[in-house]
Image: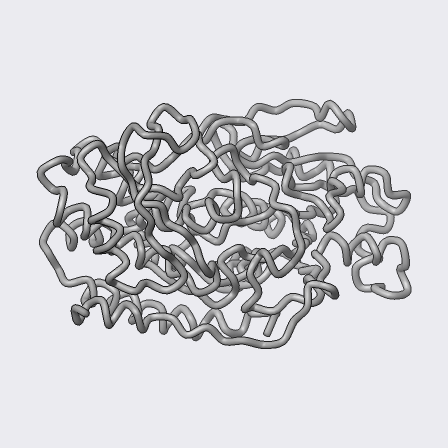
Length: 414
């Protein structure tokens, strides 16, 4: 095995602690129980008593039985739900990526919806927050810095801090688990709404833990309350929890697509590779008309990357099911909590450059988008210049050690 392959194969050590899906409950489950029985969780029940509530959510905001958070709070006699806030893709998750979300009214409840992903400022203004006393956040994350929901949360937290509003996060699991930290930390030059604050590509925290980190480390200064999950352990995979997967956006149809997003999403910004958008395998395949899938799968598997197995497939580039049009490799995620997505993407990039560099190119009109999604131009330049993979990852590890030391104090779960 090549030295680089040996290095990367040793990247991941997954810690294990006991846990059981039988005792697992989401933050929303705990919160509703607190409302039903204030004596059991008085610290949460008292937060909403007599106060106007704004809810930041979408179609993923559900309890463990599939009941919508909007309905649970709207119908609860202890809650005065007065306003909804919609992130990218809208309150029902059907608006295509990157399209502005309009101000509207929720057809089910009649509540007004304020957009957190409009054409202009993505931070809720004072005139809107004057209509609420506190904000509740309940959205399923995918564990990748380049996904905008966490940044809608961060901007709403900053606004809450500025205008004296309590901010409650109903915690949810990270589909990549709670241990994996991977990829470059966003450089100041590349901060954007797919990387608003400098954190790694994969940050290894639940959304509640991330909220604690951002609130303290980046001076959002809001009155933050986390309603934690019960029965959750950092090593748990999504499949351990007994939860149904609700697509958080149109191109994340499965938990495997969510895990693979952090490994192939940046490749998609180049417009040079097929990554399965529009199919049940979105972000899980990488291909091109020039690819020899069997050879590529064999060579990629020789790296022994943790948590993933590469399989040769034929794909339909028109958005249908797997067919017979072009060849690709399928990222079969064998253990999402052991998977290192950004490292995997690095290996994919090097492989595509080394074996198929005559068939694609770095387009000048696309490199800015790639670098923004990656959070740095150094990865692209390193690949172009043939820098060894181990050297690139070693630089990430230097950044990660500092991040891990800061991150540790904000963790909630074992």
